[in-house]
Length: 206
Image (cartoon, rainbow, N blue to C red; front, side):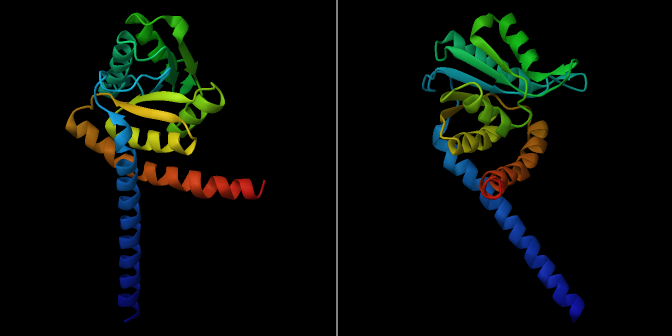
């Protein structure tokens, strides 16, 4: 009897966790959807594009997430939708530098180097967006990433009261995309925990 009762409580707890995760995931998607654009033609012009970093290569293969972000940024510049670009990502070592790699590829495609700024400390999406406001003084952004990532990025941007919209960079093939999308669910939950629980808690005791 005691074992059955414990199993029921355990099952109920798992169900609650699943509901919470699914609810946060869908709420983040729903609440940011009006600010997401698919085409460069339709996205409203903003002073700055924030390009969120990712690795250029997965193993020895070119990462389609990366290249699609770069190409979308180039298209924004060519159509006059932005005047300034902030590339943000992880600079783990002299051999791995996401923002510098994006900078190099943008310049190779005709974007003037003097309109690009580099954030080498964008270790996470939250860092990239917070730095855009607090370090680089930006308040109006077009954020460039894949559709699944933009929901969390825009949710965070609105927490920091940034006037921001998202521009979708084309997704990778479905099998690659699906694995990444599944990792995004706990990332969205953690963003809510960090912004609305841990930060207030830390502020209260510091």
